[in-house]
Image (cartoon, rainbow, N blue to C red):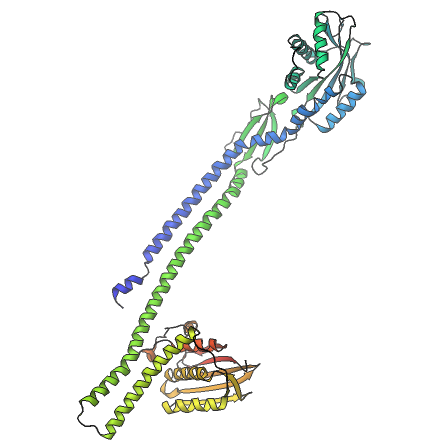
Length: 555
């Protein structure tokens, strides 16, 4: 093989190693960058996800503020202590962060009141004041009544909302209907840990209130107004940790809270609570080791994706390498095949050429010389014809270009004929056989003969001169015809057993020095497969080889 051909199929190991090293470096770099990205992403999530925790945690408060508070207006000012108590009970049950409720059963009058707010002819004051709560003693429920005014303390809540009511009435444009948001904001006061709400009157009542501020009406109407002051406990807010794998601890702390431990081993963030809880914040804290678990859980799928891509690239590189390797082997096999085939053809052609030249150059030839040259030409022509027939038959069988004949073969006659032909060709060949269990079976006699001839020729060729022996046994076992070809030849190395049936494969030994095409056993394998059978081999070096062939009996 020329150096150019070798270099064309030579595996460039340095290039492969360089490629693998570069891909591995890229793989490691990708993992490092992916881990850094995961760390940065989780740290950003640690800061941003607190909004979701806040929204989930204050959802009950929003429900209370937007839906429960307005229910006070449904009673149109006609709540009494019993009804107010029932209403508060539902509030305390549904919203644990409400700790206490002060109920002002109030009236709007056109005449002055001794306890309350008097602006012009408009008066607003409580008839009774009650407090409700789980921790309120039963003897402290009633705080004020008109019959007992000694303990009346309206407080900032009542006064602030009363002034807000008066201001709204004074500026009220009676020619239009106020929006609900405008009414709600003017009839409620939100303070730290407290919401005070006054039921919203009808628009007709508001117009009457405005008239009452300017003059005394003849009817001197009286309107019922209910005011409730809800006292809230921020520590009773149920914290919903929507990211338990990110936030190790979440607690409610005052805005002024400053943790003593500010170690770098912890990550912290905070967010202020809304509305009446604005003096407090949600405080988030997680240890670095806790966050590392979340980083790892985010990083692993990315790493698996990178590893999958890297595996695909390595697999492609391996397949390319394997393909180049196979091409190299195939090229070598084909090259050897052409060399051996050329040699197989060259030898008989050379002998024929020499014999022809001798006949051509001789002036006269004796009968003995004619017989000798005739025999040489006949034998060498048979060699060429046999080689061509084997190549043609192999191609036809491999491509299914012929049909399998099914004739009944008498096994004893077949064995005797095979032995006689081989002993005639090789007188020193010790060829024996035995048959048991059957006398005939259906098969293709021509293909069976080719199979026997190839295995017999191999047994003779690969046996030392003093051990040229072949024993063939034929038995009917479980409906199958089993042939065993046992010789005492040089044997086959265990490392080569799996290769002997491959096309163009030759075991390197002294018996193959003069060339072998490498088609014999591959041809046998194709024959057996074509005949719907199986072929296996057992061998020991320097002890001999046994080929086992299993064929159908009467299929």
